[in-house]
Length: 407
Image (cartoon, rainbow, N blue to C red; front, side, top):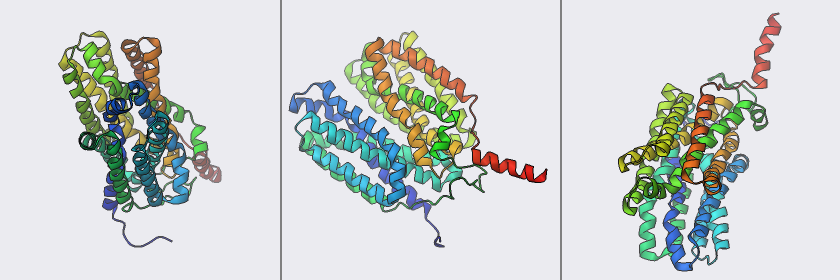
């Protein structure tokens, strides 16, 4: 039974935007590093590890979010995730050891954030199957906008109330945002698994079916490459500006805000463009631009302007990749199990977040890492030129049946 009352999809978009903006605030963590060092006298690297745990926990949460949504529903799950996220931040206000920060601001906050992030994104895409790229851009763009806006909010909170109290107010604000947004969400019903969508003619893959295809692993490799390049650069852009482009600290610090702007712009612009020109063409373009930018950073003497152009281009492309990939997974494997299928591909984000730093730490710093990213980008670019959506076993049998009956 379905209700005959028309659904206001605009309200669902608004609710998702509010939720995603609240979730995106976790990317202001760098503001808290130095104040925590000054208050507790911990090493900067140890404090910064908290956000690495947050990012890794966020990625892991996407593996379980789809099953939790099936049990609780999108509205209830998002509300609970928002409460858990807020409580993790509020409790961090009273943390006095690194272990407590790793558990609360790292694991708890990351898991809650990842759970709400992927389920609300997937749910919104299901409501707009005809505009998957644009709608993913709006959702993921809201996530980036939350990060950009809260850089000023959290900076003010730290300055006025101190770093510990800032966690308290931050947690309460995020809890209110996610809870309010969750009230506007509505579950999108999708036809039973294994059926072919009448409106699209494309089958829905279960997780097990997806893992039997080579395309799933190729998409993971492409996504890993895209995330490795973007996340590594974003994490150390100030240091690169100082060491490679000869910038002073103040000028190099300004590139952080510029990257946030280009990142958000890429999410919206390339997401919408992918609906018109094809998603793999967009990914091919971003990988080509990333390769050229990394090569420039590696082999050409840098001026401040050239450095700014390169990092802006990489941030723009990274934002587009993060946006377009949820839609690609929907195109390749259907929408019914989208949150679970994309949750597996999304592990490329978590692995990519660690890979760049690992290569830099163990194999020679910036230039070696840029070389690895460049080679991986070329390989992934070649894959995008050849990869095509797979056919499920169910669809293959269904297509073969009329032919046998006709014979």
